[in-house]
Structures are given as C-alpha cells and as structure tokens.
Length: 353
Image (cartoon, rainbow, N blue to C red):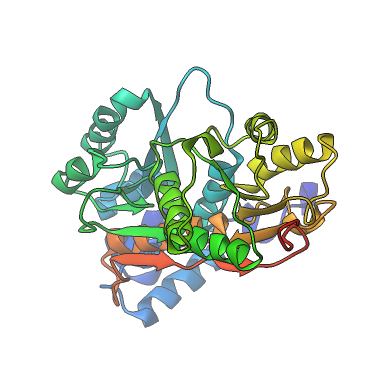
C-alpha cells in the first residue's frame, strides 16, 4: 500500500454506513460500542467486530445525538496563584484517564478559583459537557456535596468530608487507620517524642491522618504538642523546612510521620544535613501513594510506609462513574474505604537511648 497504509486505514465507514451494513439502528450501534446494558452481549460483540474490521471510529457529535450522552466525565480543578504542580494529582489522573480511554470516554477538566468551584460544576452540568463528574480536594463539611446531590447527573467523591454523614458515593483510603497503625508501630519500638509533617489542615485526608496519629498516642497517654505538627503543601521544600524546624527544637522528635513520600524527601534531606542517622537516631514513616518517580525502597535508607495506590484509585473512580452513567449491573458499592498496607523497611528502628 502507498505510504505503508493498511487496507483498514484506506477503508473506513461512518455510523450510517455501519448501521446499514449490520441492519441495526445507529442508536443501537452507539449504545453497543459504549457498553450500555440494554444491548445484548451477542449484539455488542457483533458490532465491535464489524467496527474493528471496517475501521469505524465513533464521531463524537453523532454519538452524542444517538445516545443523548456527551461521552465525558468532568472535574473542576481549583487553581490558586501560588499553587505548585501536584504530582499526586497527576498520578491519580493517569489512572482515571487510562480507564476512561478504555471505555472511549473523554475527560473535561475545568480550572476555577476555589471560591468559584460550585458555580463551575453547575456550568459543566448545565452545558451538557459531561455525563458525570467527581469531586476531589475534599474539605471538612464541604458544601460541594450538598450541591452535587441536587444536580441531575452521577457523581462520586474521591475522599470524604469530615463532619458530614457518609450519605454520598465515595472512594477513600482509611487515612485514620493508616496513621494509627504507623504511630502504633513507632510506639512499640519505644518512641515517645513524635512529630507529624502533614498536608494542608483544611483537607479531609490531613484531618483524618492527624486524628489517627493522636488516637494512637492517646492510647499510651502521650500528647502531641501543636509545635510538633506542620500542615503545609506536600512538597520537598516544605518537608525540608518543616523537618529543619523540628530538629532545632530543644527536645527533637525521635519519630516522625509524613503525609507523603514527597514531604519525606525533604525531611530526609534535613535529617542528613543535621548529621543524624535515619532508622537509628530518628525513625520516619511516610504515606506512599505509589508514585513511579519516587519509590520509597530507592531512598538511601529505604522508607517504612503506609501504601495505597493513587493510580488504582483513579482507575476505580472512573470505573464506578462510568458504570453509574451507563446504569450498568451489578451496581458497584456506594462506599469504598481502602485499607493501606504498612510496609516496614530500614527507616524505622528502636528509640535511641
């Protein structure tokens, strides 16, 4: 073939032609390709086989007319002037995008100022640009949940909202349980002077990680001085600054909990600069979101972590949202709370004498 083109690339059909070829309506073909449950599996496989053989690719506008769906899921992303890029969000989006592509769905990401998020979500839904959406960056008593319940399209929450009843669809990590277990491990190793390098204190995950840490310490009659806690952006630089400040205190901590391996990267740098040995002079546990470019086992002293994959969470959010859009059966559970694995490595050891 000229230019190396295959016969399939040379010959392709549109929806009308495929409809005539198969003797099926255009709506049935669109619904079959998009996995709607009212189309039988036999018909679906017949349509998919013909689409592959003829090189048919759905026209988004025609698909929308045939199914009444946009074929898109949405997110309103809060943007502030001094925000740093967030590799945690990027890893979650990677999983979400992979699963959306598998179902031939598009992602619609709309940036907005934090105080304009609700208005932006309403606009996305009213414009017909999305068939469903998810909420992220959850805060305590988040007003977006009540708004989401009032809109006519499916939604799911990545995380939860502390202070509100769990009467909405969500997927979350058991942040309280993860940090409770991590603190208990350090307590069992004899540590009594603790510090917490946490995310921004308005976010639900940070609230729950603080609660889990405090619960474990309270069990042993230990209080955590507010001066031993830092709530910052989860960056290397914030971890370095926070850890440096903690090490300058008259009674430096012997045990540190970090809300992210990114924070831990900076914290370890501060520990090394102070001439301390990780796992001997000071122990550290970080939460590992399974970021491919920052593996805890590759640190000079491998990090003990609480582990839960953000990419897997992105995949699952997309699966559940697309299933809700398509009214697929069986319906996935409304509430999913994932445990985190405690992986013990060399960064934790007995409290120094």
